[in-house]
Length: 127
Image 1 (cartoon, rainbow, N blue to C red):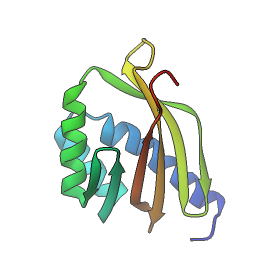
Image 2: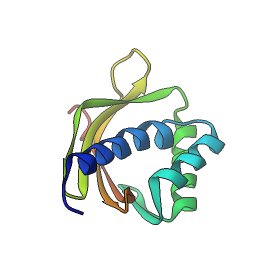
Image 3: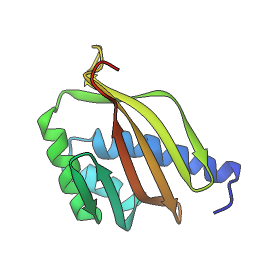
Image 4: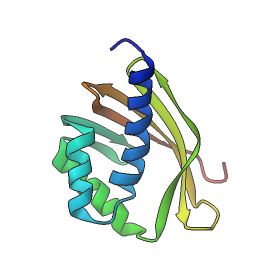
């Protein structure tokens, strides 16, 4: 995928929508629809606790994570960056209107305008 303004815009969209519509979404039906739209069929999610392959596994992980802190929201920190078929976005998470409980980075690899891989980096506590 050659980097164009259109490609960069799509990567930015994927980063933002994945943060809100997948990991920030409490409604299972809406989350599942977003995953079908945003992720490749065999997308791979890399998180500190493991590797999850395919839309079903990603949906299960995102739903279980959401259930552990249903009152938290995800807030982008700064602007996303795109480079060819990859992108990154810093974010923070915590209760609405309060300081973040934790922060991290999402780094995606896009394929056919969808997320083929997502690497989630969590910042050390106190960072």
